[in-house]
Amino acid sequence: MDDPGKAAYKGRTAMFLDQVFPETLTLTLTQKPFEQSQDDSWSIQNIEYRDYDLFIGTGGAAVFHWGGCDHRVEAGTGLLVPPRQRLQARKLPGENFQAVAQHFELKHLGSTDFFDEFRWTPFIRFSRWSFVSQILAAYVDPGRVGPGASLVDHALFRTLVLEFARDAWQADQPVLDPHHGFVFRMARQIERGFRDEGIVEQALAQAPCSADYASRLFRKQFGVSPSRYLTRCRIRTSADHLMAGSSVKEAAHAAGYEDQLYFSRVFTKLQGIAPRAFQTRQGMAP
Image 1 (cartoon, rainbow, N blue to C red):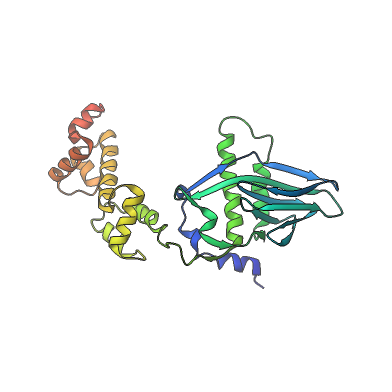
Image 2: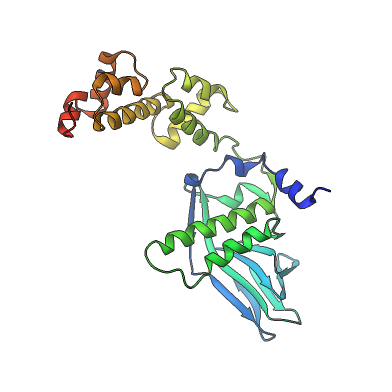
């Protein structure tokens, strides 16, 4: 028999989260993670936070109250409290209440609150708790110190909050612009198929909107038109080949240009120097 939790998880693939790329998200950890083991004297009394606070239960149980609802947080569950919400909580009888709490902010495309982009429920039971618990253990591991530790912590928590978002997702907001994610998929498509003369048209044809509107969204995000972006990809590739010792003809062909003279004009215009002079300056002229 199929696991209904896994079926629900797989059924959420065609949603807003599938249009989001890591480079579109800006995560700020406003405090260090708080790993807690609380006895019967513990409680939260009408506290208001300025940012999001994600609680992930790992043992025992506590009741959290906000927004007129009670939520029982225990091992395998997560509760996300939005900014400027009054929160109360009390431990339930039994073993100590154990949880990890993290304050954070998460922006999409620079300024939009990520959790404003779709409807979500604040309380969930993680569908992939085994995976989440492993990531959580690594995130709060006090033994991981040294160069790069904070970068790893940042990446681990982003995984945790996105696992929460997948399980908390209810429905995309119909009032939001549904095309934000498209421009990043388009950029990747151009980067991967830059040798194809028709790659820009192919990408535009797959847009869930008109080509003109897709181009405007693309220019707004990347500062250049899709065609200009393609040219930059090609010239960047040719420069790599020139620095590796390829001839101008070979570099032009690798970048998708059949006309070496035309390639030289485009390269000079973008780089401010002719291909052979560029190669000589790099000390790589054949």
